[in-house]
Length: 101
Image (cartoon, rainbow, N blue to C red; front, top):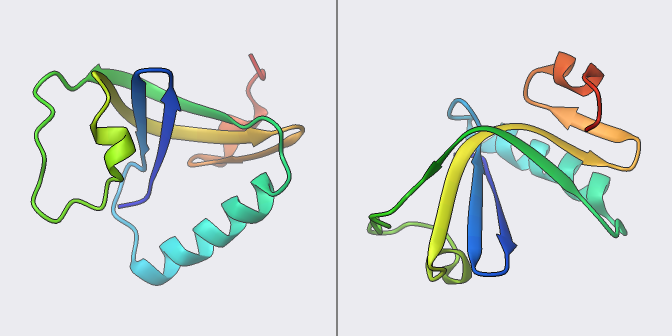
């Protein structure tokens, strides 16, 4: 499962891709994202339909780093796009054509 995690104080966010992606494709996408954010001072992650996970169920073998699972507030949502300056990569390519607000 391709996901981004972000921290904002005591709130953690998980931006999850809409579908499962084969491992090799995940690694290629990760390389693209890492290259895109290299040296960036700010990164914008955009997601849809945030849901607060109040139960905070931990799944055996979950690869989620503990710094994200130990926060008092946790939201997960569907990943839409990542923006760094004028560069954008979106789940649906047309999402990068939307206003950058």
